[in-house]
Length: 288
Ligand SMILES: CC(C)(Nc1nc(-c2c[nH]c3ncc(Cl)cc23)ncc1F)C(=O)NCC(F)(F)F
Image (cartoon, rainbow, N blue to C red):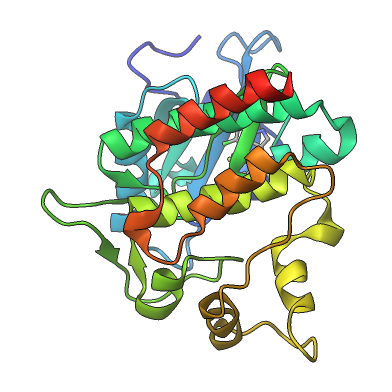
């Protein structure tokens, strides 16, 4: 359907509906229909939000996604110039079932299926880290579902490459994301270990079936004496008192143990994704 080496002609892209706003731009569901008879394929098209106009960051995001090739990472399909030709659009595969945040509350799959999803996320993240990329926004809303059984990590808008020899990436400002590891909140330091922390929070979301009443920000707010707007300072003080998200209802103890290891205060105490893959596999046999 497309011209092979990932070049799409914008005149064959027919907008269908908005999918959402990512970290860098808006994503639209389009039909790529060169035959102009409706026989084309659905694609997700991401255009850079003009106002922030961070072209360098945008090119970076396209380069990152283009360099990734893994069954648990949303597929890059190509790019094309924007209508009127001034911008560059990123063309990705479209997954009709949407994100886990939408799917889990509705379908409530068995816990063994949740562990299969968790293991696939670890496989995708292990691959990403093997290329020295840090995702920086791992959360259930950024995990897509493909045909009921395969999950794919998406939205690489905040992804950074950790230079060889360095162990973390320090960002200038700290984008507003729900729960960060302590070192991110305090020193804006992102590392492979801060992605592991985020995986622990994602595991919590998955085993609470993304129930918004049990969402991480809500649960942390409940831990404050007087519930107020959760500020970073308040969250840091809770985390430094070793407060952590509670165990989701009916969550097996083994899974709770994985979460707690991901939330070790010291980054180097947290497991790497390669060992988390093992943990998920082992626990699957326990839960099945
Ligand atoms: C910002 C955007 C658009 N948001 C959403 N995408 C899709 C959505 C549903 N199916 C999709 N197929 C491909 C893509 Cl790139 C997105 C979707 N569904 C709901 C969204 F809010 C997104 O990119 N989210 C990260 C992702 F979920 F993709 F990991």
